Image 1 (cartoon, rainbow, N blue to C red):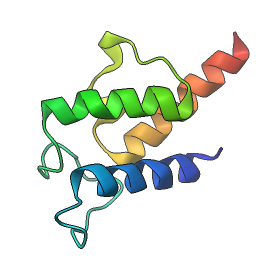
Image 2: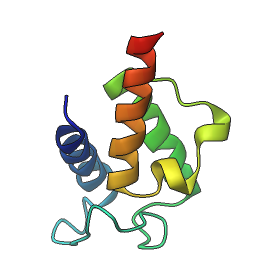
Image 3: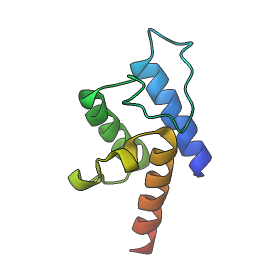
Image 4: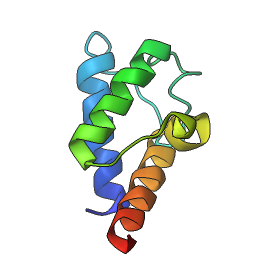
Length: 89
């Protein structure tokens, strides 16, 4: 699965689960999901569970950061990196 496909799947999840009352809300792949009010800290936990289940990667507590999970782009990079690390192990 490419980074682009990961981002598309996460976008779909975010729109379905956090923007269901604002389906026309537009945001960029690089926009901060927290700063745009797309979800709050509880939403971050839901996102972590989604990422772990959907992409079969383990998200450690110290990896729950804005740099890894703050935007669709950062999530795509993070998931891609975790999948490569898993394959290399």
